[in-house]
Structures are given as C-alpha cells and as structure tokens.
Length: 202
Length: 172
Ligand SMILES: [Cu+2]
Image 1 (cartoon, each protein chain N blue to C red):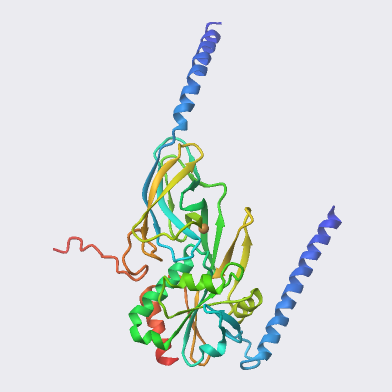
Image 2 (image 1 turned 90 degrees about the vertical axis):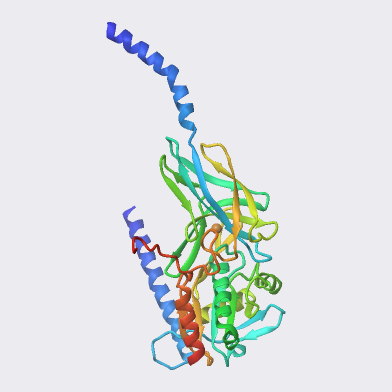
C-alpha cells in the first residue's frame, strides 16, 4: 500500500518535471524563431494562416501596416464574445473614421463549429469592419499559440462541448509588435483611450 | 402511567398533523423579478437568460433548469473568469435558493443557458420560458430581450461605459 503510494507520488513528480522540461523546450525553440534572442520574454504575435469569411487565406502579413485589436472567441459563446464584439463595435463607432486605421479581428477557437459561413453570418450583427477568421484546428492552434491565447475544448455530459478561452483583446502595432491588451470588463473609456494611443503610436 | 398514555396520544395527534405540515412546507414560494435576455447575432446557437429568484417560502428550493420553445434545451450554467480566461460549466445539480433568500442569475455568473436556438432573439421581444424547481411548481416567465451584448437589463448603448447617474442627495 505504502509502496504503491510512493510510486504514485514519484510518477506525479516525474510528470511535473517532464511538463516543465517540455515547456522549456517549446519556449526555447520559439525564441530562436523570431524576435530578439535571449531576451527571455515570450513574444506575442507570429506567423499564422487562417481563413477569412469569404474563404480567402489571411496571414499575419495581411494585418501589417495598420495596428490591430485581436480577439479570440467562438460563436457558441453566450456572453463574453457577443459582449466584447459589441464593445468593439461601439468603440469603432466612437472612433469614427479613425477606426479605418485599425484592424479589428475576431478569430474563432472553435474550428469544428465555426466555418467561414458561420463567422460571416455571426458578424453581420456587429461593426462591418470586424474581420472574422477561422481555420483548421491546427491553424487555429498555431494562431492561438502565437498570440499566447489559452483555449481548450471542454466536453459536456450530453456529448456537446464548450470552450474555455482567454477573454482579453490583444493589441498589436502596425509592425506586428505586441502593444498591450484590453481586459474583459475594462471600462469603455479606458479601452477607447488605449485604441486611440494605439492608432497614434502604431 | 398517565403520562405515557398522554405521550401516546400526542404522538398519534402529531402523526396526523405531520403529513399536513409537510404538504404545507412543500409549497416553497419563489418570486421572480426582472427576467431578461439579450438579442443574439444571426447564426448564434446559444443565448443567456438572467433573473432574480426570491424564496418567500419556509424551505429551501432548487432551480433545476427550464424549457422554452425557442431552444432545444435550457440549462443552469455558471460562468467564471479565472486569470482572464472565460470558463463556463453546466450546473446539473441546479441553483439552491434557501428559504427567505435571494439567488441571482446575472452576467458573469449563473445564467440560464438557452442551447440550440431555433432562431435568433431580437431586441425587444419576450421569450417565454418555464422554470423548473425541485419543490415548487413550474413557473412561466418572459425574458425581455435587451440589445445585443448588453450586460444589464434594459441598459442603454454602452454596456460598461454608461455613466450611472449619481443622485444629488441633499445638495440643495
Ligand atoms: Cu452557459
């Protein structure tokens, strides 16, 4: 009994060690890919290939030249996603023509249910400048990893599933460099100030 | 001798009363205030329902779920923000409303999850929902649909930015 327990503990420790080592390897290989070497800070942003609402391929290069506000979510999301998208729409409204100097991007983390057509339909309810992107599970995973977005599929008892996901909006400058974030439930005035600063500096 | 006979009679009387008492106790009285929902984007398959439940009865009751013609099913869910990550889970055991207390279904926490929407919800419409309780009889409510993305019932344009009008108090 006791021996078995010790065995379990040892297995648990081994699992933790392996996980840490695994992470180190992933982070290590990433930092050699792009950005300043040896900075130790994980960079936000990177290459991705996704599909727009009309089926066209969209990569990180298509976002360059303008700063971007990027939000990851899914259409089966009852609250956080429609709220954030309507806030982004309201902000675009307040920015007026300045919003044209910005890419507003909504990326699905739910490849299975959110095809380009679903994204297109869904986004008709929001500001028409919001760019909807989706892709294969692998493409979405690569994009989420690039932007340091956490998401996971959570199976439900009835065979259905939901998604946990980072609810922050990622701000990138016109050169594809990380600028900051906007947290969920942040005041609209604060978000507006951040977007104005992003447009001004980006 | 006498006292034991009296005890027996008392017990017999009590036995007669208890069923009546428990019947009475089963009638947990749930009062529902401000049931609301929000408009959904086209193609959206889910919606959230919010309301406040007050148990005016004498025993605890539990909101188990609901049903509505607009959705395949309506469940009690809970949303949580953990380190900036949105998590949502079904609460199959339901939401308890202790006697004399109030339980709230509001954005950011417990909500009715309307799943498998048969059509989008439009602003201003009323969605009929039948709430199911463990003890109380089912209760019909109408969720009033606010604007898309609203975070409070009957809120205006800005979900977060609206200035809540402060009372001037006794400044005069
Ligand atoms: Cu839910």
